[in-house]
Image (cartoon, rainbow, N blue to C red):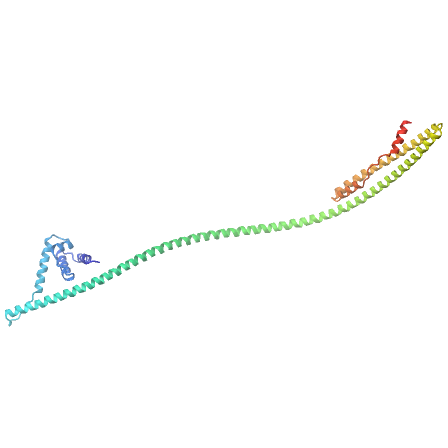
Length: 344
């Protein structure tokens, strides 16, 4: 802080303290001359105070110098001293006063310098303090902003936490509902499993019954197939016998035709009779074939009954079809006898 600024500050304080303009000018003169060592002038006084007209600071400045000279003058009042001694003594005392005043001014200047140095140090300290305060204020603002951001983050975190709590509560509710549904599903599954076990046991019983029926049907079918085989064997045996007889008859007929031509009629008659017998044998064979067809129909019905009771009847049907022999065709000898019979 400079001397000029300090003077202006102190004058402002005096303005607030003294409302009388003349008294204010006198205090400003004392301030400038005794405190700051500045010789006051009318212009300086008016520039500092700026009150009243230009005559007021000039008049007050004159009064100030008169009071100062009056105070600086020393009168030696002693009736026994001559005038010369009084004058010399007065001059000496005035010189001492002036010297004391100079010393006081010097000391005042030194004190003022010291005060200025202290003021400078104080101002520097104040500047540093203000800078530190400014930095502290900036730091405080930064911390306040950070605190505001942290409060905002905390509020957001609390809001998110509340949302998470609500979501967790909703999730727990859904989990309880799902657990109840799972328990209901388990109960229903247990019921279905029990019902399935009962149905499975019933189905196993039905399968066993069907298997027994299929086995019985298979036994019946095998028995009927065996009977058909036996009948077919008897028919084949009879046909072989007839074929043998027919061969003998044909041989004998050939011999008779070569030996005795006259016996052709009798042989023809015998041949006709034998042919009739052969026709009857063939009719018997056809009857046996019809019986075999009836047996095959019965076998087919047995197969259908076995297929309705169980899937295993398919294997039996395949076995029956594979074991059923084809219908035997007439041999060459029979075909020859038929041709001869038709010629006769």
